[in-house]
Image (cartoon, rainbow, N blue to C red; front, side):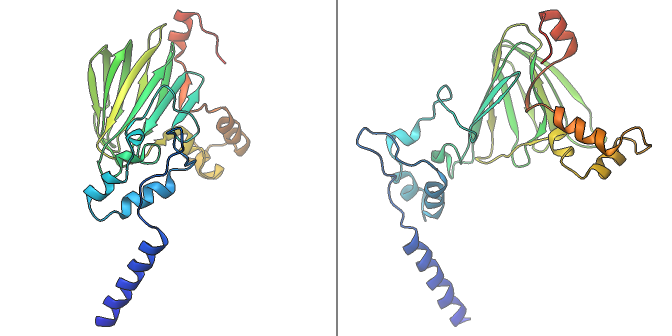
Length: 242
């Protein structure tokens, strides 16, 4: 036991030496010189106390601009709008706080396709326009549909499949808060069609009406998670399908 303890101590010392915990370096103009947050998040996670962790931050680290956020890690753009997430990976200052946030900008008839957050419960408030929200937690559970107007909020329990749809011909915006700094997301349809074609075919009927070629065709037409629909809304707003 004593030798194991010594070995563990040595390994920890090696990690600490290889990854010194220091403040984030900033450029002469005050901008962050890091192009990737991964190393900085790792250093924050290694901090033995929250005090040491918070002291590693610069004032600029405490600001996340949803309007300027760009890049694949924070900004997801589709035909129906976009979502911007601030989580531990895109906003390292959240490390250790247990919270994160996403802003959704949905165009007319835009919707966030059905998805789940495997590690976080979501509270969603409409700040402009309206949303039609829907969720189901598990097999046999009630399928809830709620219609939200400005400043109204709903909740999506952790792991529940849910979606948000803008039924208006004008843009709608929402703010989604999570009780996790890394809630994760899984789009249902996009993930389902990543399974082997034979399995997808079996789930969709398996009677010969849907073959492997059809599965691949379906997969290629699935939009990004912020899609454009629903048919009746598109007709009402005079929006052509893309």
